[in-house]
Length: 106
Image (tube, rainbow, N blue to C red; front, side, top):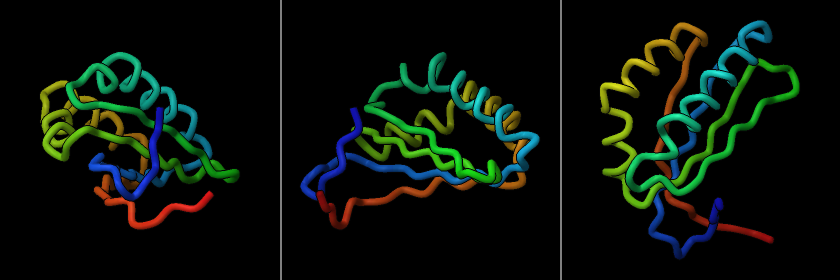
């Protein structure tokens, strides 16, 4: 379950993907497969969510990890490096960025 609170020591990663409407669903399928088959089983993985904008030209991925090192280890694994090569072919660009939760409301 996603947890968004400032007191958390959780590592938050937000990745944005720029796609075309024609490749949006293909990339969603690839990302869903990556989470189901690999990412969600990695040490330190806590939760993730995938979001698609209404024009289907951007996908945002919000993920949480116990530690920064857990995310980096997953990202650098041979399995994920191969998956990222396929992902890169389906989108114009993608960029994972690590964040600390600075404020929450609600």
